Length: 158
Image (cartoon, rainbow, N blue to C red):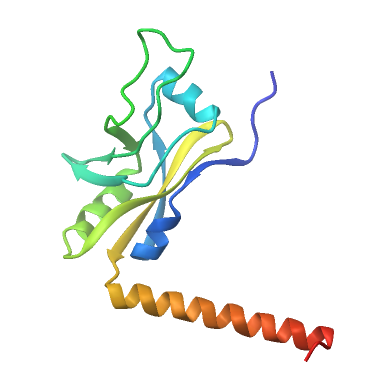
């Protein structure tokens, strides 16, 4: 059987980019059981309530929902169990230093397969205030309207 190549997205946390200022992004491997991998290959996962915690020199992913594998038996996994993340020691020590700063948290952005291995993209992020969210949304709408006006002008509609 041919080995899987490239990157195949499973789940993405779009709300994270809306709710947080992303400061740094890390790619981490996941320690998973067999039924979790099969469920991910079926394309089923949710990162909505997910977050990562550094505990005893290890990084753990909490709140990520990987549903039970439909054809699984008594060996099926618990859907919201904490999962260990695989990072280099230097990255973990950098995360420990940064998360001790006030207001910084670890948020999963994407879950994907890269060359056949399950990976998660976690971000060091700072929470946005409500007015920051509104301002970002207003800027996005203004940019979209400007692009539409330029496109209309290019087609000669104005």
